[in-house]
Length: 253
Image (tube, rainbow, N blue to C red; front, top):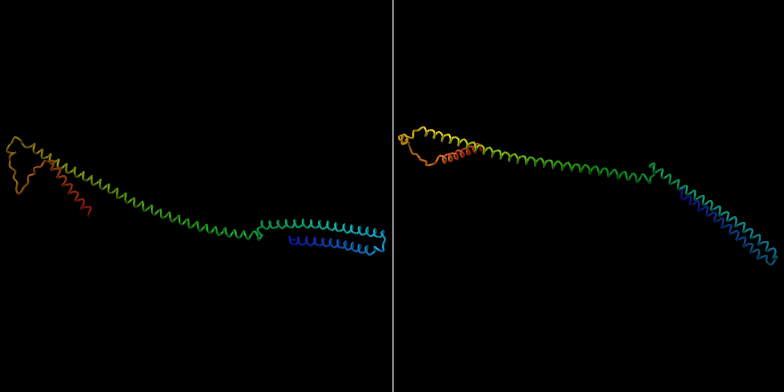
């Protein structure tokens, strides 16, 4: 029994009992009116004793009808309370059944919104997966670009470092070679000067003929009035220039 049906039953029952009460009250009223009319019609013919007897009968009948109406109203109230309790029990039963259907996942009011929520969840999971893949691709591209930039920077720094070290080593080698050539030239000149001094010491200084012996020179000649130190210095510069020129030619080839 649903709520509407129970309400209809209660309304109909209450209406029936109300109608019965109204009918009984109308009957009592009609009987009273009839009694009054009979009483008024027999006033001229009946005596005062008969009037008292009829009034007592009417009062008894009215009390009886009144008691019946009160009994009917009590019965109606009892049935109304019973129907109300039954309606409450039916509603509780419906609520329990609805809860059982919801727990079992069979209620339409439950599984339809649940299906919509599951569909929304699936769509969100798919969107999150696509977003994850795109972010991973972006991170991978950024990583690769930074890796390439770091490798190029390292190669550039390596080339610069190689050129710097090479230039430093070449400068050091050049200075060492220059120092070596200077030492060789100085040692050669020093050896020559020592040999000349030894030759002079072997000559007899007391023999004036040897010192005054004329030097035979053929062709044009130039007499340098320079000291030995200046000659050695000039000779060193000349050898150094010749060596640098030969190194440049080798590097060009």
